[in-house]
Length: 79
Image 1: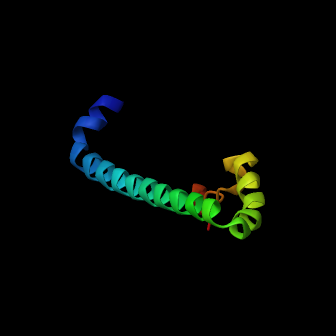
Image 2: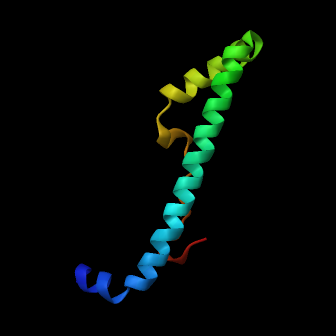
């Protein structure tokens, strides 16, 4: 069933895959640029480092599920 669906809907799935990959790569690039910029700011300014370092530590030790937005309630047509 899964393989037949992959073949039957390949054009729709391919276009969806391209959109997903595009968004993922854009987010990765944004995270990389932001991380490098923050690292440079930490290195160049002690005030910036002392101001934002506690937040950086908190974000590193907090599980992703705790800071991720909850999924929208789409089951059973509820809104």
